[in-house]
Length: 207
Length: 178
Image (cartoon, rainbow over all chains, first blue to last red; front, top):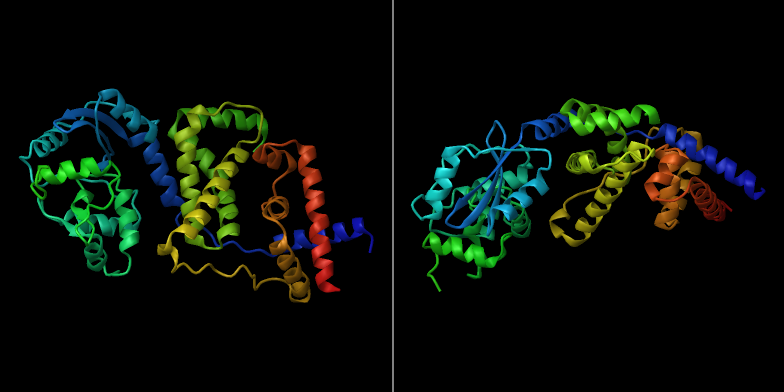
């Protein structure tokens, strides 16, 4: 068969194959749409100072959706926040949130009573972070401990990943999760900050 | 999505949530299907489609109308997200338990099943660049202008690349059949 004929026959076959392909309907379409639109319209941002530095905060009507770790200046904190949520509006932070975070940074608050918006998290990450939330102020647990608590004892590495992408650090205390051998493990905000938070909580001695 | 409408659609998507919803409504199924064809899992394809629209939401204010199909921009974001998925999967053993569904399609016309299977095996043997242009044309059913905007080349170049890829595929398939 001549090359051009072969190609047109092949093209015909490919078109038929396309007609026969089945793609299962997306069952989460509406949920994904709703989340996106809410993200578009509903997110508010604020930055405020604490003893640890300038904290960036994003929240929806449901609760806090993201907290950016302390930065040295207001401009840095705001830039980080707007990079993640370019369409959201910057307003004043709700006083209750500011108060609780400032008290924590002074070492006076051991637990947070703030509503959180979990809607952007997948079930595995949510399970990991909800477990991390149970670790009391001033204590630490290992990655393996979290993996066991959520019934996936072999998933310590995946736990580490889920913690690293924690959108609401400090309030969801991923800094309290350390390596099983006593090493500090990683931290999205850097090891120095992890050490600082654990020292603030008395889980580590000041060096 | 006709280009004259698209310009207005981009504007609406940049200025209101409802406008962004409109963009989502015209494009989601296509982006989801694009991802599904490459990962063969509904859930993963949905995750990829969701992150494509999150990326779109983050960047939409920066998009300037250049007369190119808007969907091509979303496909470009999808290309990146699919590549991220495969990179992460290679690196990360926590994905080990993912079993990708077979790409074989039971509803194919039985009498042509052998030929389809030979074409599919042939596609798997092509280099990714050739395979992609065939997939974009025949399975994602994109037109030359959209593919050109997506790949950042001219429409002519798309046709040349497609023709060459088809030649290679025809050769692989006929070698296999003979």
